[in-house]
Image (cartoon, rainbow, N blue to C red; front, side, top):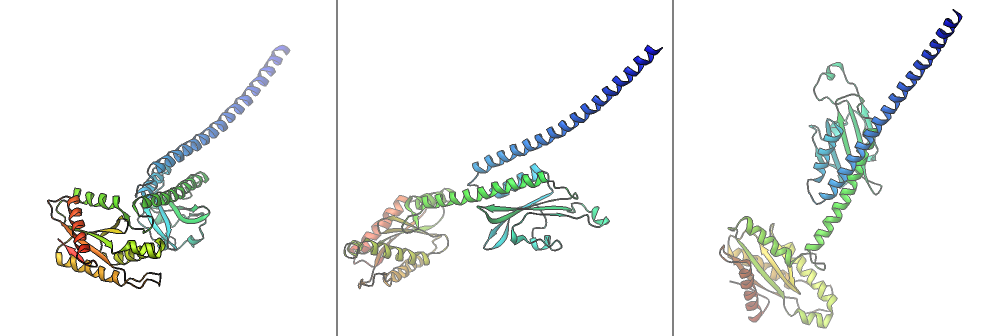
Length: 357
């Protein structure tokens, strides 16, 4: 009997130890499972961040990049609304959103958010009972500042219908997107500068010859019925100016002349440096040859009145012009050749004049 009781006690102890171990094991498994879930979420976030970064870098020249990033935020984070604002002239300007309310003054009129300070903010409000029943009624908002080299440049503002929806993981994820946007803005600005420098003359800042003709060819691909003129301009006796006063003075005169021409061009007109002191001009939507002639002659008169920054130049600077027209059945090369012939006639007949075909 004693042995039986001893065995029973031993069994109870073993059972208790087993249950304790089982509870410990289950608790450990639960903790490990929760940690594993968190790690999986972090891994998913990192994967998403890497994918977004790769996507941004491969679409850096796309004008819709910010809108595409905003769509990715909505898709990945599961928010109800997402909006991206960037500073322009000291004002936050909407760049992308799927929210019906995009006016920041109206959105935050009851929440006292100081948007100009560029600080992260979180808003949670339950609202009234009847408001809870309204579809898409927002109850959670976070604002993540976008900083470019420690300079506040905008906000990502995300919203959800659930109260207290956003966790620290959401904040971390959206913050990483904000960093990606900042990098995208910087890279886009650099890309734009590089692209712009590739199509402009480094001295005059006007378009170069290649861009000029590429643009006209693209216009003709879209519509061969367009009517336009090409004007060739050459500064009279410019070599003498360079020889007597130096190339720096010559450059100043050339800059002054191109600025004068640019001020008198209309929307759609294009000016480019053809070579040396020669300028080529595309006159958009020609309806009347006399109007074009008078416009160019007016520019010629303004150039004659141009005064070089070098006060030692007494004789006025003049220029000659040749005008040719695209008639629908001639090539760009032919129009250009005709304009060049007209320029030669202007030069050979006394200079400082406009000759049109």
